Image 1: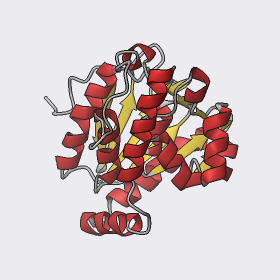
Image 2: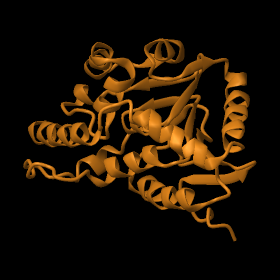
Image 3: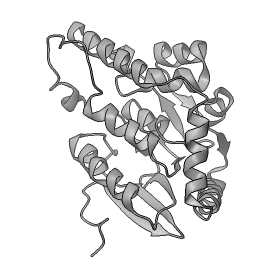
Length: 245
């Protein structure tokens, strides 16, 4: 029996030092509590597995990567604004742990990723999207709240302030080529080329010396200001928006 058995909404296979994490949580890969708990169990396993040198996230559903966060889960949040945050909430802390992992992570997007699904992708090191199939969005403002899972912080770093505001305030879907032009994804590819390209890249990285890969990730991150203060500020504003909605 593998340590990667027993997940409710994920399937994991390790091939050529690449962990392929397939989101398989019908009917629309909702980012709900069971899927969060799966990821919370998975991330430490991937960190500790010396047989894994790179990680790819993909979906078993051709229409949905992750549709969005579970609204019913969000509705369990407090109706009154809690005290100012001094540490990251569980969801954001998990995504930040995934981002900081010494092993590179890659998203292969061939479907819809909105809200929390987009925020999971944003927390990966690289993202590649299928033309004509991939769509991304942060639609929270239309619901009277704001992105609360790191979306505002990750987007501003990737696409710049003006584009981030266009995405967050516009609340519309963005297709693969436009997302690539913005910098939201690394590049857009024809659907039949997406997984072969990602596989070749992941296997190439996984074959490299792990310490060199780790140090390269750390060095690139040093080029950017620390993200945690912004994540805490986003969390405070998310809590405020939720109590006003």
